[in-house]
Amino acid sequence: MAASSRVAASLRRAALSSRPSPCIRNIRPALQVRWKTEATTSASTESVGQLDAKGGLDGPAPAKSIKFTSDSYPNIQRESKFAKLSEKHVQYFQELLGSDSAVLDGVTKDATEDIEPFNADWMRKFRGHAQLVLKPSTKEEVSAILKYCNDNMLAVVPQGGNTGLVGGSVPVFDEIVLNLQKMNNIRSFDEVSGILVADAGVILEVADNYLAERQHIFPLDLGAKGSCQIGGNVSTNAGGLRLLRYGSLHGSVLGIEAVLPDGTIVEDLSLLRKNNTGYDIKQLFIGSEGTIGIITGISIQCPRRSPAVNVAYFGLESYEQAQKAFVAAKAYLGEILSAFEMMDGRTQKILKKVAGTKLPLEGDYPFYCLVETSGSNTDHDSEKLQNFLEHVMESEIVADGVLAESQTQVAELWACRERITECLGHWGGVYKYDLSIPIAQMYDLVEDIRERLTKDGLLGDTDDHPVVDVVGYGHMGDANLHLNVPVRRFDKTVEKALEPYLYEWTSKRNGSISAEHGLGLSKKPYVGYSKSETMIKLIKQIKNLYDPNGILNPYKYI
Image 1: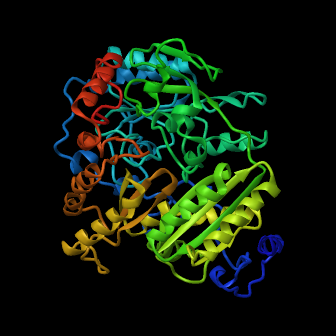
Image 2: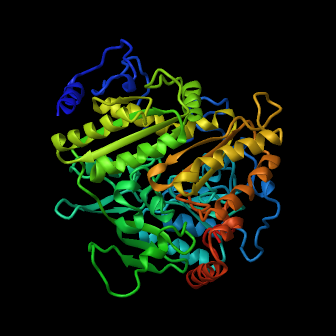
Image 3: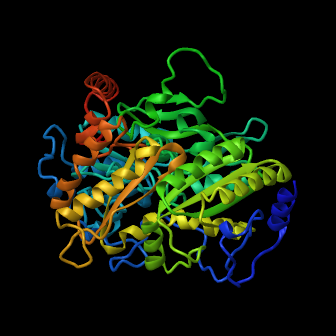
């Protein structure tokens, strides 16, 4: 009891002095809550991929510097069944959409500078040859566009915020880009039920800020929240940082509004949590990556925003200790545990080097964990958190740690996790892999790949080595590893060393080759490592049923 009181007293102290504090493992039984005021990290509300051509953080790289996907993947050939765009086609779309800003025409005139941002992905790995970008404002306009394209065999790529990581949201050849940014209205919100209805083009952060004003929260959080759109999130079944607490979008989304390739509008914006009347068709669209229809609106269950939020950041001496910390978090924090993120030490060093971030802890550790709790009762949560901190401290599971004492510090700690993605592209590019692997074996793959690339002479400190490093981080609470290989340049030799080896490695351990990023273009050839022949056959049957002409997002997914 005395120990608990001392921890409580320590937690209440505003320990914001810049004077160095001892490691928590040296303070028993009370935890020394501390923060360094000289930390300069800011909240990460930026879009991912804001790296300039020189590797800075000032803006996106010019699309023209990216190699065409058709050149990088010469085995993919344009399907001859698709028509070539003509002036007649452009005229139809201009008359339909009216506004010049809704039609970016590169068919009848030079609009390269305007269109290029829609042709390239933010990772600077994929680039298409689109000559026409359409920005409809209503579901009726989307319907008219798709019906016309289906009748005239014009291929279409649905695009939201274009923050995907597998090449699914940009064209391969000259497909029309249908961007939903003009469909950005929040239609309704019921504060009693917590159900939000909104257009697909609403930015995730905008939706979450709207809900915050009403004491609710969007059940999805991503590092790209300032750019990604909620329709794209649903279409790719994005996972993100809150899945541990709120589950996947398959459970949160109550209904969808979508347009099929033939122009049929699917009206299924259910406001009911229970509706057991036949096949749950909306589930087909969640995670379909725009291959069977374009989502134009969603209804989603949004939880009450927790008034009591705590975030802690720990340094650990081994991956085994990180696993022990996760087990302890589940046992001691229970229902208030809302996130448990793991980052290896290499990611934090890169963050410090590239972004100039002052890290929260003074020492360097092989692994770091970020733990978030969210609850409705501050006293109740504090007691649980105190017991957890006391346990991991006395058991020497953690080597050092800090606990945020303000909303600003909460954002600063989260930035240590969220800004990793953008910083990894500093040297030129990144090979990114999003995998589900049993937790005990998650980091084994990172070490295996690092050893493999080093042995092959691909990883090194000089420019003649294409690979800079191999790092791992991700959602430990979901057994989801983000294995990243930052490179000085994209190199087919590196790609061949990585693929399909790491997919085979994952498959042998009954993992998934895509935990949350989807398949897109980059993972389409490898879906057999996670799906049986029977499952692949069923998926193809569904695709052929909804899109018999194959006009939606061709060359990808399956």
